[in-house]
Length: 470
Ligand SMILES: [Zn+2]
Image (cartoon, rainbow, N blue to C red; front, side, top):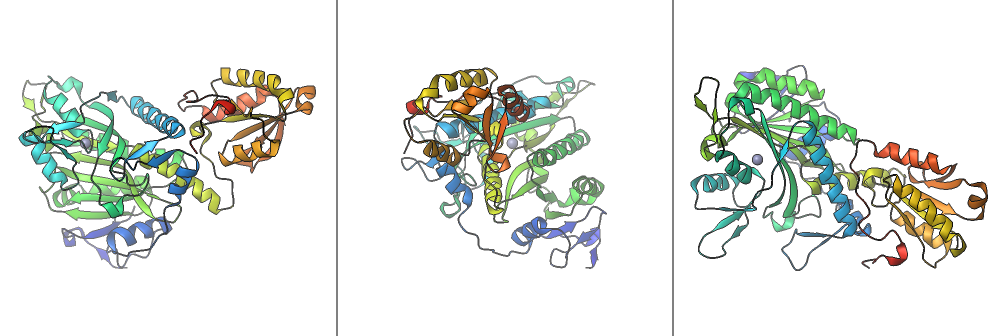
């Protein structure tokens, strides 16, 4: 493996950068783990590996989360009640992470006038994947991210150096006309929800400091949920040459090699743009989270701030989607479940994301009242609990709960009523039956929900009264 020196680096090529600051040609680089090799193969070596249909699509259907909407365009999904609940929880979670770092939510329009030069220029950079609408004579573009709305808002308002860094956020439904052959379930829909954060900073130094924080946050978020991102740094040539130490610092924070792609200076509005790739259950990398430094759009959109000395300046703007899109965030959890399946474990969502967290199953109608009282106490602890009160056999009820991946199944019969204890089938333990008191069950579930958002069930807690959407 021969090293490449910085002055040998050319535009339009990929390189591998290692934590010790060394640069290699991708063709010669033999290091990196399986995930990195997959990224390298896809992005730099042009290898076309063949994959089966992504397992998350079947899971999405089987769990009745979402369906393709045949009455709309391809890649437009309809969320069923369970999917609406799960995606709302993901949005709540994204908002909570952004609020923790000081993000301020706004809500802006989904369409922008293509006759306005700044909109047109930005849209031209985006290319062919725009949805256009033309209600009468004027032509509008449907937003493909929340940039337009937030920039339009910021240019109308007076900003000073005291407002910076200003973190502005929107969970924006976004529209991208992806190629028909590439539209895939939650991995690449044409309509998606983007938790889009922009950070206005007073110059490149401050932008780089913010960038480092976001970079670390994205890596930590992945680790929190049990996955590692493999990263592609798109960097403009000047930035690569002048800020090489910064790139090495980032790679060191990752602690593993990164892939660099060098682009011509001045071609894009950004100087660095990192794509964080998640590796799915088939070993396929897909870009999810992203962060970039934008030096062009504040001028293009006329976003200014008044500095300490009274001079008017253009801020440097970070664009970031810490969790990619809500759809890809969900895709990651479903692919993690597919990985569990592959390794012989019972697949499941994290308890905080599971539509039903506790299912109560009375063995017969004689125990219904007792079981319902247990439900009320669990519900009072802000846990999503429901009861299978249907007139079907116990084994069918258990099978049904298993099919829904319910993390805790509580069967109630004579033994439980007499002993005042519960028999709980714990999915994360392979469905093992564990005896515990009601308080122990509540504490255990609450412990798994700590730090995550909560929403009530979106449908009746009685299975007998719930539409099945068959
Ligand atoms: Zn943006």
